[in-house]
Image 1 (cartoon, rainbow, N blue to C red):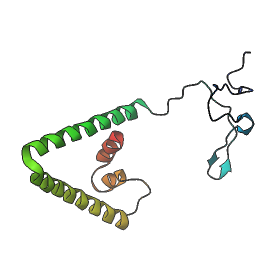
Image 2 (cartoon, rainbow, N blue to C red):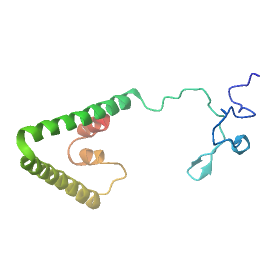
Image 3 (cartoon, rainbow, N blue to C red):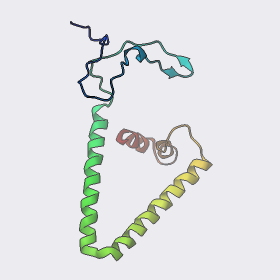
Image 4 (tube, rainbow, N blue to C red):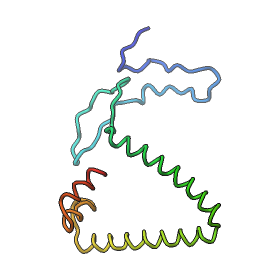
Length: 139
């Protein structure tokens, strides 16, 4: 029996011996989405169609982040082996202090000068629009 791509099978193909044998065919229905409080039109199911949701630049950034993450674990192990646990705790404390200071400054700026965008708008506001463009492009 041949079926179209968008139709559901009349009976699910189950292998004998499985616990879940309940027929779910009558419970499946097209879903709807909300956008700005209004109901959007129902779209046909895209069974078997590939939809690329990430642009290539974001895929490169995600893969770069995973490589950096694995490098951090390797570098941490090397630093622990060469410097010892005491120096590792001191270095972590210094890095955490620097990160805390930057985040405190950013939160103070955000409270004093709220903007509708993100932190890139502060680069445009206080430094230069070219820096904001570069930061937005790198994001």
